[in-house]
Image 1 (cartoon, rainbow, N blue to C red):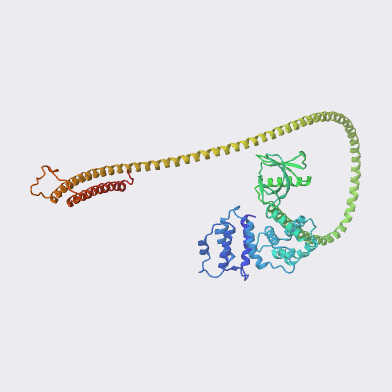
Image 2 (spheres, rainbow, N blue to C red):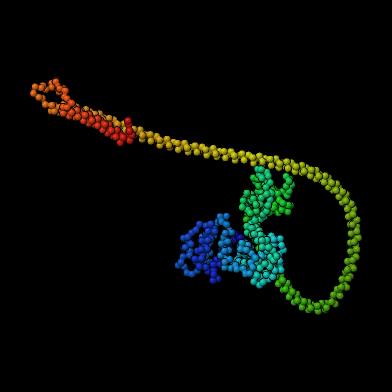
Length: 613
C-alpha cells in the first residue's frame, strides 16, 4: 500500500464526515476548508487561485466524491513529498472531523481519546483496499492477538467468536465504529487496567504504524572513551536510533542500515555478558543485552531490518499484510477448488448410481455366463498344472544362481574391509584438518585484534585531523578579519588623503585671500598717510586762519614752519583749539588703523575659514 492510498483512506473518513445528509455530496465551503487544512498539514504551498477556480460559486450545488477527486489528485496528492510532513498530523485532522460526527461511545468509556485515535489508525492500516473501508475478521483477530501479547494476557476467543458470528460481520467485515464499540464494551479486556491497555495500544501502534521493529534498553560501548553507557534503542527498517532514555527526547545518534551491515555474537568480556556487535562500512558498534533472549531478539530484528532494506521494502507490517492477504487468497482458491471437487464428486456419485443400475443388469448376464466360466476354469486348471511344473524347473535354476551370489558376496565383503581401512585413514586426515582449522581461527582472532588497534589509531587520527581543520578554519577566519581591517584602514587612509587635499586647497585659498588683504591693507595705509598729510596741511591752514597776521608781524617763510612765532599762553583760545584738533586727528588715525586691521582679519576669517594672527 503506497502513501497515496494511505492518505486517501484518512481523507475518505473526513469527506464522509462532512456529508451530513449522507447523500454522497459535500458543500463547497466545507471542501474549501478541508483543502486548506490539507495544504497545511501536508506542507504543500497554498494555491488559492486554483481553489477558488475549482469551487467557484457559479457551479450548481454541492460536490460529490467523484467531483472532488480530480482536484484532490492534481493539486494536493500529486504534490505530496514523502518525508516533508508528519502523517500523524494528517490522521489527527481527519480523525477530528470524523469523530465529532460518528464516534459517540455510550456508557462508561474504556479508552481515552488518544488510544481511540491510535486504534482508528491501526484499523485504517489493516483495512481492505475498497470503500467503504472494512476490516475482515482475520485481521481483527491478528490485531487483538498483538494487543493481548503486548499486555501478556490470553485473548478471549469466546467473546470474539460471538461478535464475529453476527450476520453483518460475516457478510462485509468490521466497520471502524463497530470495532471501537467492541473494544469499548470491555468484554475482551475484562479485568485489565486502563494504563496497561493504553501502553499496549501505544506499543502496537508504534510497531505497526510507526514501523518500529523493536525498542528497549541496551548497553553501548563508546567509540572514543570506550566506556559502557545504557541507551534506549529504537529499530526501524533503515535506521537504528538511540536516545538517552525511553521518553525519546534527547537523541544521541543513529546508525544507518544497509546491505553492507552485519550482526555478530560476541563472547562475554569486560564484565559484560550477552554481547553482540553491529558492523558497518565505517564503524563497529559493540552492544550488550540484558539476557540471552533479548540478544537473540535484537540480532534477529536487526537482520530483518537489513533484509527489508536490501529488498527495498520500507515497512515490515506492510509486507506481512500483503503475505497474509496472499495466504487468504490462496485459501480462498483452495476452498473454491474443494467446492469444485465436491461438485465433481457429486457428479461421480450420480454416475456411480447410474452405473450400479447398469451393473444389476450385467449380473443377470453374468449368471448366464457362469456356466461358460466353469468350463473355462477347468481348462485353466490344466494350464496351471503345466505352469507349476515349469516353475519348479525355474526354482532349481534359482538355487544354483543363489550359490553363485553367495560366492560373490564373499568377494564384496573383502572389498568392504578395504573400504573401512580407507575410511579410518580419511578420519585421521580430517582430524589433522581440524587442527589446522583451529590454528587458522586463532590467526583470524589475532588479525581481528590488530584491526581493532588499527581502527583505534584511525579514530585518533580522525580526531587530530578535526583539530587541525578547526585550527585551519580559525587561521582562515583571522586572515579574513585582517584583510577586512586592512581594507577598512585603506578606505580610511583614502578618506584622510581626500580630506588633507581639501584642507591644502582651502589653505591655498586662504593664503591667496591673505595676500589680497595684505595688498588692501598696504593701499589703505597709503591712503591713511595721504589723508594724514592732508589733515596736517589743513591744520596748518586752519592755524593760519586762526592767527591772522597783525600789524608789524611777518609771514612765516616756510610752508610747514614759521620763521618767527610766539608761544601762546595757556589762556590762549586759539592754542586750545589747535591742541584739541590735533588730538582728534590722532584719534581718527588710530581708529582708521584699527578698523583697517579688523576689516582685514574679518575678510581673512570669512574667505579662508581660519584666522591668521
